[in-house]
Image (tube, rainbow, N blue to C red; front, top):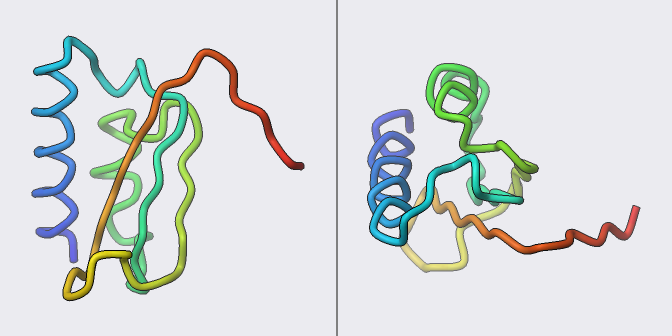
Length: 83
């Protein structure tokens, strides 16, 4: 699972860079997986600041059939919470 996460994190960083951004510019990150993130959460996700805004782990299968780990991020001027 760590290997999949590292690949996805690297691809997200590549795409952010192409747009002129970094993780620090994101306001929220979503992770979709039924697998335990804790073994690599600190080493891979937190270390990269991938959850700079808010990191949400959705304990579910990714929306794309056949994937075990999916991630997305966003950056908006104002985050509204339902909390």
